[in-house]
Figure 1 (cartoon, rainbow over the protein chains, first blue to last red):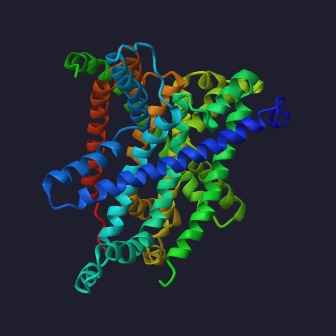
Figure 2: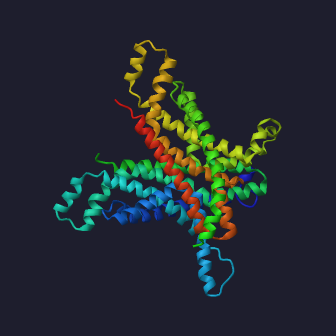
Figure 3: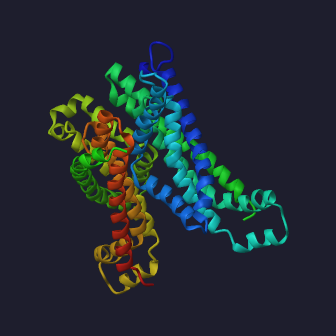
Length: 230
Length: 225
């Protein structure tokens, strides 16, 4: 237990901040994922064949390729691209871009592919009459989407979105390979310096379990809130 | 675009695909048995056994696969007692550690898939079997299992694809699978896009095949009610 003391003696505070980092990356990735989903869901549902192909390519490729490979692409590719630009200006040293941004971005793209599928499914299962009625009644675009379609969509999407959240939360463990100090990376460091990997990795597992358990409790509440009236 | 690199790395990556496929197939087979075992335990009426099986699947589904591999590969070696048993022969090999982690992980997901498949079997089938005087063992193997397999095919197909992607984590414990070799080539040539296209293409091809095989099986074994 001494290993978990806060302060210089133990790893308690380090692991606490690492947990906060995991939460921060997960939330940022989830939000980036929503932005991607907002862009690609309309493409997937579009009648234009080219746009539809782009939308489908995004979800198929991301969901068919391992997360680790996507992370490597952005980790090596991201700094490579920036270094290339810098070399044009005569700066040839190694540049490391912010691990938090690369990590959130690559996990965000992955999470976005899953969110896109969820939103597409939710939009498609809304009764057609709802769209028609809203149009016939002459609501403007803002009310049409935000007051009529979105609330119905959220009710259907939230149970699946909580699955996406679980996937995203667990995927953040993979960005430890890029050196961002989240739960996995901190446990790796602690395990290396104390030579007690069993304890620290098991403790990491407990932290992840706590995060999944707590977030499920919150999301279940959200689910009941949004399914009011049904 | 470095087309030459793409062509020259293709055979290397294809060679590494063999390890990926080996990891995938062995852990899927082991995971199927583990999953079936825990699905049966989940349907047990004894509360303690039931809770144990639920706890197993909760823990393995609630933590990242990476943590599970690290606990098995780095963690278990720390227990002095294990080092003296024959288990150490298995646990010192990253290959077997990866297989153990993958099998336990996919076993947890498979047990959930099978449990829900078993629970959706209409009681009428079992009653019909019983009233015909068929022994309960045969009802299980000849009626419940085939129906459960048919009903769980779509979800299991997803699990196979998830597991295919999961095998990429073997590269974190020094195994040179498809992702491991891809990472090696990326870090030596610094051409991530080209390697990503080739390696990602191989992964997509495998997902495509799995997807279509499952689709074919679903059609073939479509359950008429």
